[in-house]
Image (cartoon, rainbow, N blue to C red; front, side):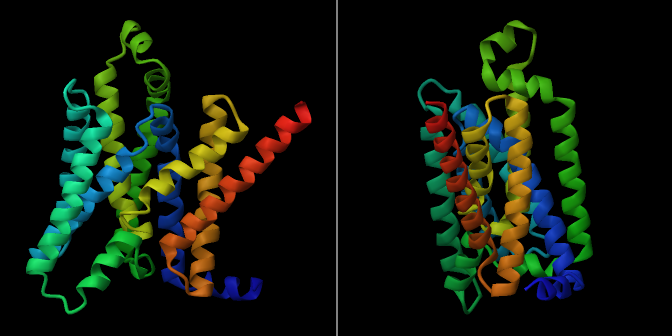
Length: 281
């Protein structure tokens, strides 16, 4: 098994997939902790469905680079979702449900009406649950993912204290002079970027798992925001590496395999936390 994995590492397509997988997993875990603590974790689910709808439109228009269309649409939807969620008549969870279901339905409707593909069900399934496109990445796509991931990580590092304050107590942060609305908007935009990048890796329906599971696992074992964030990042990257290599060697779907590893890690963290509690008692 070790020799097989070592041989796979020699192929450029495997190297590209691992680089992109690690970067996406790292970025997802950083903001995942904030989304879970703010009880807004399903924003990832809503925006992933928006990205599916945008990708469907891009496919119908035969755009050579659908990222140039999908990225702006998803970012604008993140802004709209945040603004709508602040509306007293439409609460955050209702806004997410409306945009999520609407985008998913319209995307599938447009694909079924205008798609020229002979395998519509296969195209939809690949977009929703991930495809082998992660193994056919070009160097240009890898560099683009790396650049955007670095931007995300730099922004998170620069505004770490502000994000920390906004995550735990918006009223206190506002009283301290922090522009809460602006930082909430920044978080939403970053999540939108991560989701678009992650669609090739795990598919639109599984992106939320990539964001939520590492954060929830870390919260079982640690209490401080910094410790949870660091452990979540380490766990997310480790799960992505294990899932990718397992999928490549065993021939299983990449996205589903990574999520399965994340679920396994979460169960292990729960068992450890329960054992700790029992020992302390």
